[in-house]
Length: 98
Image 1 (cartoon, rainbow, N blue to C red):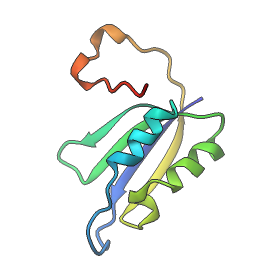
Image 2 (cartoon, rainbow, N blue to C red):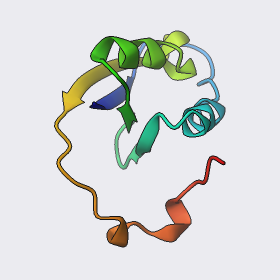
Image 3 (tube, rainbow, N blue to C red):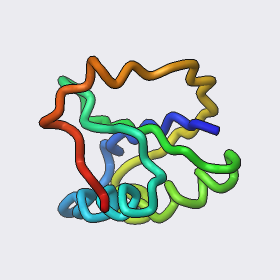
Image 4 (tube, rainbow, N blue to C red):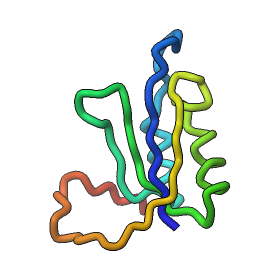
């Protein structure tokens, strides 16, 4: 199943924002993340996970440094993803996790 993850920065978060990129790289290596990135003009980021269940996805998201540090709140929702057209994906945004 596919799950949409939305992370929103907490206004009361103190200290520096933890490094998020190595975490995403680990998801790519594990073939769990389909796509993701910052949401322009907002203090939010989003990504799509492929996991066996909502509980599995929630467990993965809980290990995201942005979430585990308390800097961001997370919302996870099942997404009935019906199709992807790889022809419209810019090649320069594809990260090969092999």
